[in-house]
Length: 336
Image 1 (cartoon, rainbow, N blue to C red):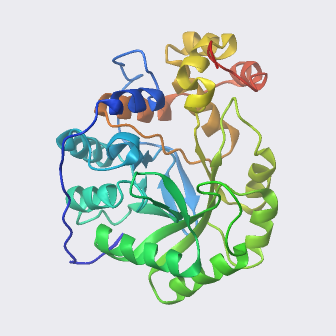
Image 2: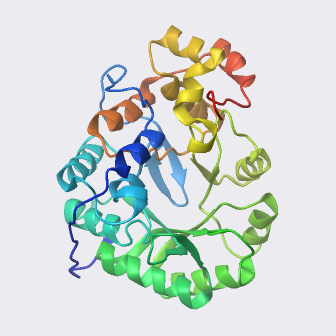
């Protein structure tokens, strides 16, 4: 991570109790405390990310912001502890965004992790913003993309961003300018030395093909998981071009029951029982087995859940496990 000496300031305020519900909807095991599977040590599995090599289980920092990813964290010291423990255990791929807070998570990363480890890759996102009420809105015009990159540089206190993902479709509706124009802005920023790698998020296979005709793409972030394989065509294209794939909602979203639904699926639960792990860990291990450049960025505000996620590095699914899990294409908890 290229660093600068710019200063930033983060604020703390009282937070709403809504954070508990939000966090529980995203945790890998929402039923209570967890015990990591096996020894939690440095992550062994690695994969290319552009011209870098990262460990395949990283960290998504979104949950380090306040309720609904708005404002500072409810417990700032707990958030700091998660970041310290992640790096201690070998995480060298962290996903963040200016819209997380806004600015809160970037400033926290700079506060806790600077001077950044040499091998750390921090991926950011552009294309969205927050309104005064915390709603998600588009910010994907060229001048907005440029502003967001420069704001990332300021709040991360970095000289250059490792990786910038263009997020499409924020807030719903069509994009205000063509993909080619958006990527043109990012390539200009790369030529100016403000970023290294370019990625895409929430895109179709057609979008990815368009992008590859313009610039190399280091990674694609799309919703994907054992129970949501609608973007298989995008993943296939990533395989064909050796592009890293970073799934979000790897355990399903709150709208489909998330981890609760996985726990209720007989195939997932059966494999979990055989290995002595949680259903959520099985779902993450399946992703690692599904593509050798699959990079995970599970997020949490808890050190215990962080360690549970990183313990997935030690789970090896065999042919029997994978055959049983191949039949899982949709799960939902009661009421979803």
